[in-house]
Image (cartoon, rainbow, N blue to C red; front, side, top):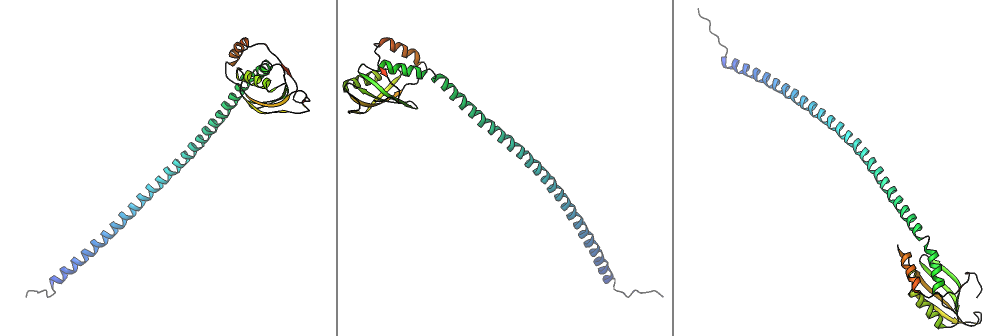
Length: 207
């Protein structure tokens, strides 16, 4: 007698498919988890490598900043050294100028005028003295204006007082000429001038 299977074969097939789908889903989830973990590890490794490179870059940047600072310090020291050298050179060039200036004061001072004080502030000279008349002061100013070592005479005051004796006391300002190569021009100018001289007294001398 033949045997008849009464179980519904479609239901068995559906269960098998369901089991296969569940297994496939589990395998897919596991694969996705493994892939995600691998990607996480890969990106973590990339981040760590980039952080190492960033640390190296920061270290190199600090070294470069230090070198730039040292270069700037050297440049500042160089500029200071050049400035000191310029000052020393100017002082060396101006050393003989004061001799020429005092010699020129004597040459520009006309007869009838004598000085009681000479004061220099930077390149500005202040003359205090006594003249027999205002005409003598004007002559003094003309001589200064024609000088190679003095220029820009400016008369501040001329007054007659009992303490100054016979004559008028005056205060006059002039500028010192400081130019390279002025010595030769000054010598040539002195040769053309008359050899007039006056009397120069110390700044502490009595009027």
